[in-house]
Image (cartoon, rainbow, N blue to C red; front, side, top):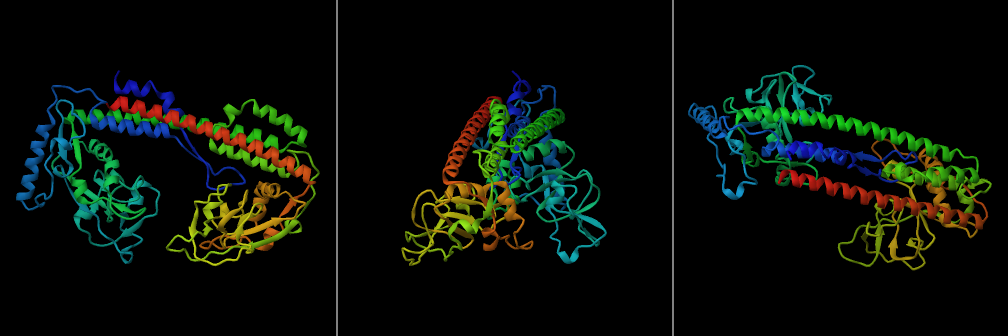
Length: 539
């Protein structure tokens, strides 16, 4: 079976392998989830891998072998060195057998990238050199996005920093996965900024489009070799020059480019098709969940829920859709439609026995003390994550309000906007842990079930109430005040109804969690199948 047949015979696998990521925190709209078409992403990577290994296009024994191309390239390079136009290469490693990652097809040859081209880094433009006219300055953001903002340079510039249509570029600094890569410039005369190499081939013996594929096929290696701190990294010129390229005959280079274009166009069509299906699915889920929230009472909710439950396996197939279902459950609980009760709301402060009161954020200790303060990440996911904490060295009395006790409700008063107002109830005493200044703690009176109140505070209507009253300008952390929290309207049926509501919410949340586990298992199985097909294809 050919490589192309292995690809096309598994299209259902590529289109069904999808990663569904929940948004951070809880959104009242439930629309923070992100979807990544992992199967099609893997298919694109596979096509590129097959292309640079010589498994996409058939070899023709009559093609001039790559070794003869390399001889002519070497002659051209020697001539340029003698004429003083380029410097003699330094530091290029000999190609040993252990360097070769796979066997080459007949007529192919290994070559170091630096033996095929000379690289010139762009100019380090100062902001004082920017202009509103002249040559556009090409930065990495302009390579990745043709609509990105552009600065201009209106002055004399070295020819090695000037680019035009057809020039071969390699960006070598930035964020792995988004910034590194080979490009062919097609947007007219421009000035090249630093962190991008202008690459000049030794003669016209290589297809630039194939070389773009070959360099981009090395991206995982480049990322592993990148230097620098967290986030911003760079690939040295030495690493680029010593990159090992599998070079086919010129005629086969052209055929490979044509085949890759054909298969990438197929990926584009599949992506559009899957995207359309996912959008249609989202509309269907939203429509059915809206019908649930519009139910008049608990009896109608039960009736509509039964209809939805019949199609759980086809409706709730993404993390985003399951998160929306959780929000609907909370909305129904707070509206007296999950367990029927008359909704008569009162300000939260009327049912509190303590708080709202801010916590404490002491300086982190350099040694283990046995006392920890929570970080904000400890409560953003809806459950208490004690690993999100840090050691502190304080002497706090046992009677202090800062210790975490069963029944406490912690509310985030400051964070990224989507997290502001999120809360959790502490299920059991947590000795040795206090809560930080950017959280408020409340405790309810005996007439209120704290978990019922926690669920009501997590409902969309309560979160929107808090978000509408956030303070903070752009550039400062959004916050909610004690007064805002005290004034949140909450329902308070009799304690028996509160307990019954909590039991029902717990039951439905557990169902949602099981759906997520099943979704994760299915996604993992599909990913493993996709990986198996990849391994079979490249082996």
